[in-house]
Every structure is written in structure tokens, then in C-alpha cells.
Image (tube, rainbow, N blue to C red):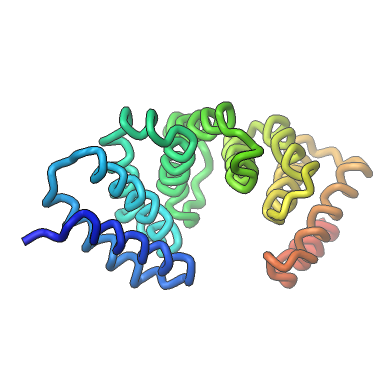
Length: 237
């Protein structure tokens, strides 16, 4: 016996609510059940739409729970139907696939390995996906997605040690009075790495780094102790 696609759709929408309320274990359980149910159906356009939503959820849940196996499931779904999703979802497809691959590359945020000749192609693939989304997204239609994609693109460029390019994209977001404090924090981190690479601190660069940490520390979206400690460490170096 298999669950009707309409009921699967309803269940997938419920999983989104679980993610929004940070009930990630419950969301993961739901994702696994719905994936099994979808596999019982012939892959038609409607089921592929459901797979797309499920893939995005698997990537989000897997990243939050530090489960690379779950993220990989989402990436595999997106790549399996790549031609269909590129046509139907374009920006959202590139963005979600880039998020999934970046999560895998960074081991869901736990990797301490820097970009090397062994993994540079993987990061370049991520960068290209964010770039594709950037080139076709309409800012006026999806402001938050536009800014978050820019931040993620800049973060990837930073990991590739392309600091000047990364700073250009951080600055685009910041000039628009972004609500995302991570733009300021990641821009500051980029300036620090650039500073270390050049081994030459200018007054302007120091002022920009301090301003970035202060802005982040005052934001309601980030914890004050973390950014304050980072500022103190920097000033004492």
C-alpha cells in the first residue's frame, strides 16, 4: 500500500514547519518516511516537484544535525533530476544544490581541512552554482534569497582564498542595509585573513574589522559573547 501523492505533499509541508520550529530530529524522521513513500510512485512531474521540496529539506536537516549522509540524499535527488529542476526551479535549484555540496565539502561545518588541490574542484563547483543563481535571480522578486546567495557566494570565494572578490560581494550586501549580520561577520573574517596574508595592517583595515565585529555583536541574530571575544582577540594580536 502506498500513500497518495496529495498526502505526501501535505506531510512534506508539515516537515517544513518542523524545521522552522527547530524540531530537526522529527523532521529527519519525516523526511526518511516520505522518501520511501515517494519511491513507491512512478516519477512523474508532480512527484518530481515533491522530490525537490524533500531534497531541500534533507539538505537543511542534514546540515543542522551534522549528518552528511542525509545531505547526500538531498544532493543525489537534485542531481538525478537535474535537467527538470534547472528548467522548473533554476535559481532555487542552483542555490539548494550549492548549499548541499558546500555542506558536504565542509563536513556540515565540522571540517578543518582547507581548500587544496585535492578538493578545489568541489569548491569551484559550489562557487559556479552560486554564481549561476546570482546571474539570473531578480533582486526585487526575492530580496532575502538574493542577499543570502551573495553571502554564500562570497563565503565560498573566501574559502578559495579569493579575498578581493569575496569582499566585493560582501560589500554589495552591506550597502543594501542587509538584515543578515553574517555578511558583516564573514566580511570581517575575510579582512582578517587578507590582513594575515599581506602581513601589513593599515588603520583603515583595522577600523573596518572593528566596525564589522561591533555591528555583529549588536545584532539580535548573533550572540554578543562570541563576537566580543573575537574583537578582543584581534585587538591583542
